[in-house]
Image (cartoon, rainbow, N blue to C red; front, side):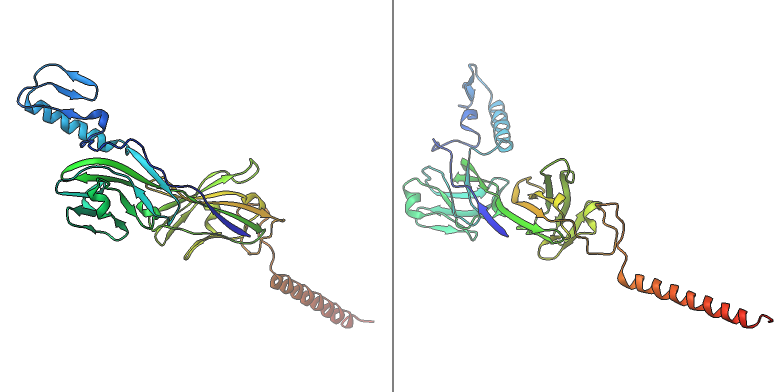
Length: 314
């Protein structure tokens, strides 16, 4: 029996500034050249500064802001639409890009129209003219989880990250059945196992999947295979627990399988079970062959004994 639950909803930060500059609001740098006071957040240096110093402070502040997390986050369910908020008045154009790729424009507007540069991203023109620069992601998927930047001309206004709730699936199996784990993204993922009690297998990474490549812990090598899904064969009660599919690079969970295995262990293959010390089961044909050999030896012994008795003198 399998059921899937997905949780979460959209949310966003509040109090968005109409102008936050290239750095955070608390880290804005203001300079009047050639001589003025320089301000970094609430810290003021009440003496004149050179243009070179002000530019240096601006660069450091901008670099620091890029390294830090986004101003706010929007969380939705997989395949829901997501609205990333942004407010501002742009005299020429406004656009959205990914924070880690500022040259890759997703959607943009000017005073006459808006256009979706990449499919699945859009801005609304009548809202744009009112100062609402929000970006709509029409079908949110795991590969779109990142930080996005809202811009007016060359100025960064606001950064918003898109988060997607992991899928949650409950699975109940009988001993000997297979567990099928779906890999929702093409990027490398890890399969993390969390045992429910100390008597089960140790928790930790059990497999990694990179495209069509599968690598597993030795304990799972004989049981795992990769087709369109990852299959773990011959599940037993001690395999019960949580199996998480985790984006290897972003370290974000895509899917959590809560698995319960019932019944006594049932090993159906001839190779030794790596989880027990019982060794291999003896195939039926081997038992039959051994019986035939023993029967043949008995017949030979009986024949030789009778022949020996006939050759003895009376």
